[in-house]
Image (cartoon, rainbow, N blue to C red):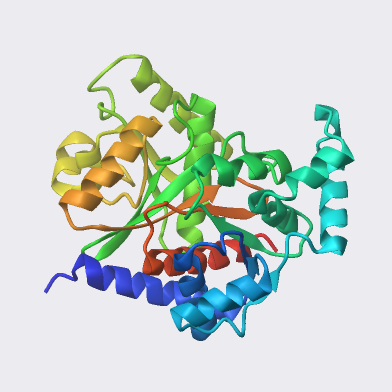
Length: 335
């Protein structure tokens, strides 16, 4: 009997929970005004998946928790007006952004924004990662990360990946959230980052560089870009199994792969799918999610020096719990 999407999701999330518990990380949640965040925090604390920090006024947060009939006794609550932290974070931010003309006074004002405050906690090691976006836009979440945490030395672009829980298997799709029109070099970075993400979550990375062409079946600028990106991945990381350009059907279906790209180590058994642009990636994951009953977990942000995760504003409490757990596991690789 084939495992259902829900069963695949449960198995995958159980693996994540075990990994998170094995090495507890500290996650900062800047959106304590959102009931979903408070409810998710209570569940994470109860399940022992991470050490949590909520940003806000303790009295206000605890009053709302009591109204929601949840316990946040195991969750640390930090005020944005904490004088020691405010002084330290503002000074560090002003130093980081000095070349942009940011003054200490402007930096103090920035720390009134919980996203910036939380990002500085991660930057300075007071937290291992941040999860935000339930009540704020993607830009509100990732702009501070771009300014402060920045990309890894060998990565030119931040990308967003989702875990797609299909019946019997979990696939990784990228980029579905951040980079609209990646260059070949950026596509290669996305592929390398995605292979690392898959590996970190127990998925053997077999990377398909997607296109409307398989091999030499089609031509055009977008196909050439995928050909170049595939070559760059092979040059930089010969240990990664990668093939492209390849169509989705040839990447996932062994019978199609046998006729379109025989002998490929990836075709017919790909686990990581790299889309040529954000348009195709975002549309595809949502189409699969909504029409095939597939659970999509994420997105996680790839390529940053430290872990920051952007929630969907439509996220449910369980979505947020899953995302915090995934973030905790992802952050383990940062330390």
